[in-house]
Length: 224
Image (cartoon, rainbow, N blue to C red):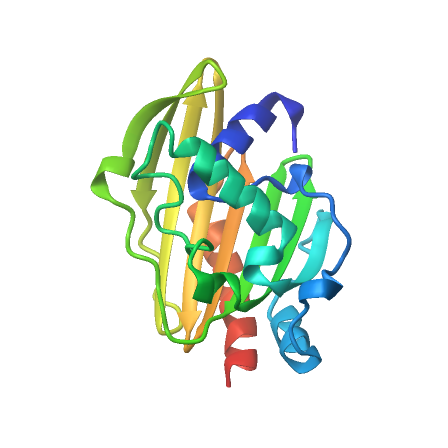
């Protein structure tokens, strides 16, 4: 990830409820909170392979969703963001603060390259659940991030339907002369939820859809 965009990337991901791949440095697993071996292998199999031109920056980490390092960093970011944007912080994402979600088995991986990063999580929930759409108030707003004014503009993408439920967004974060984009995709198949964040200077919707297709194919294989 280019350092020139790092601050905006982190700011964007704070609002999305996740932390950047660069910031997550952790062992490949969490033995103290690991799900049963079969479930863990199933969730790991649903993760994307390493995209061309990228490398693994983090993971795969497997364990209860609320105990994963990436989730913990995301929750800390949400708590901080809620001081200024209580409605938008963590909106349209899985709520890891809910006990039943926090206890759910999950697998997470992140990839990085000079052009940006991809972070993916697959969570096995106790019942079918899908996050509510992004509130209208969160589609366009400006907030203070570390003393800098950052404007977030999010549009809902017309991604072809995936699984039982799916949704995709494209957010542009601009602060001063720096601009970055984050594409987000969420797909549900049964009680499995796949969440993916693609961050870069420019994120093309078609590229996001291609990744979503591959992610959904993997999800379909393990959901049956």
